[in-house]
Image 1 (spheres, rainbow, N blue to C red):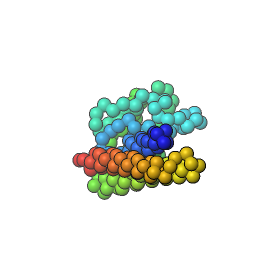
Image 2 (image 1 turned 90 degrees about the vertical axis):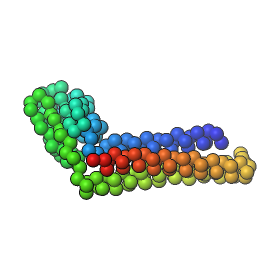
Image 3 (image 1 turned 60 degrees about the horizontal axis):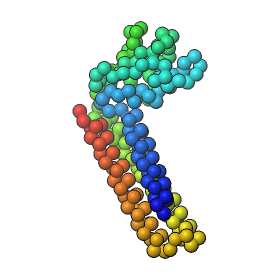
Image 4 (image 1 turned 180 degrees about the vertical axis):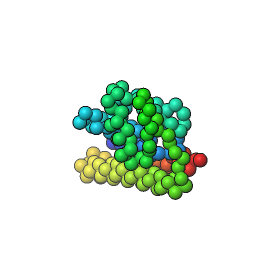
Length: 184
């Protein structure tokens, strides 16, 4: 029973981690290196993440700088940034590529909050799926006479408590991200 709950806790924590990773890709008014992490560059015919072929840094809260190690990669890095769905415009001066993060419009902020809520809902669905799997395992254990009906009921209430905790945690992660997005 304990190993079942530990496994469930690990899987639910994984859903929260995945949610946080998705949130790191969401553009807020602030510059972060994680914004360009998902961009893949066609580097001599090989799809390569930007971070593997250049140095990415954030000199201030509104700018991201990208310095490719290979001078021949400037054009493809610039093209990859422009074709990404982030709506960023890189400026190439031959030594470094600068990306200024424009302030978000009110409409764009609301859209981002909707996307964040969708990610959170997906996370909650994943958490509930783990709950369903754990409850199915408890029913199977009772059927095989590994545990009694009382133990199954206690296990189900423990699983529900665990689920509620992780759903609450996902809501607090969302509230934090929403505050960050709406911050001007």
